[in-house]
Amino acid sequence: MFVDATSNAARPTTHIKLHGPEGFEGMRKAGQLAAACLDMLVPETKIGVTTERLDTLAREFIFDHGALPACVFYKGYRHTICTSLNHVVCHGIPGPRVLRDGDTLNIDIGVILDGWHGDTSRMYAVGDTKKRDRRLMDVTYEAMMKGISVIRPGATLGDIGAAIQRHAEAERMSIVRDFCGHGVGQVFHDPPNILHYGRPGEGLKLRAGMIFTVEPMVNLGGTAVKVLNDGWTAVTKDKQTSTQYEHCVGVTEDGHEIFTISPAGLHQPHQTPG
Ligand code: MF3
Ligand code: CO
Ligand code: CO
Image (cartoon, rainbow, N blue to C red; front, side):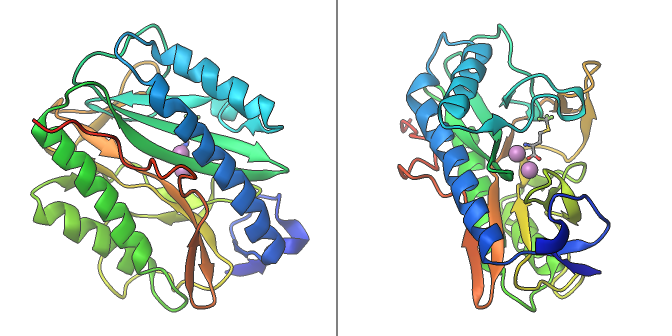
């Protein structure tokens, strides 16, 4: 079930890798670079800017810092970031679409630094967003942080999912079931799957040394999702807004460490009231 990561960390296996201090240090550096890239994009997400411009800026930033984009060539994906607007749930493809007043935008970035994968996403509010969309962004962020807050050795994956689900559903919002978090490290997507719903006490028991993402997608409307013909873009079937946040987290002896905290403290979008 579990395996010491130092012997074979770069190999995808069915086992769950348990990382030591060098894994945590590698993830700290990769996570900080990914988060710094999302910070760099904050002043760039303005009305009139195309999503492919944001992709170019992210790619150049990553190369300038001696890292590689994790998403380029990943299962045939060709871009550095995913740009998911409004009713796009995840895996939106950067292109000529310009940002418009009121858009909610998720930017998801994967970087590889010294072999370690930093994977994080957050929301950007373009101009004046709708009040209910701002509430959705807040609740999604809070749900992710509530899920992360229960992470410690002996807690279960169900405890994480339940904490996230409880917060979103209390606001009459819904959790996407079709995508989940994942083990991460020297492999981009590794076991286990991290579901963003569940029941307390159920599922795998966490152990110190596990490293995985928590990345809930929360919808204003129903949970139903479909993938467009491009093979990537996932959208809500009812076309209502969907938002997402993502952190990389490691289980420590007495709790957890978040690797992808925003160095500039820009995790939540600046939202103009109204
Ligand atoms: N960053 C996404 C995740 O959180 C994966 C995107 S896969 C891509 O797991 F190919 F679309 F980039
Ligand atoms: Co991820
Ligand atoms: Co991601």
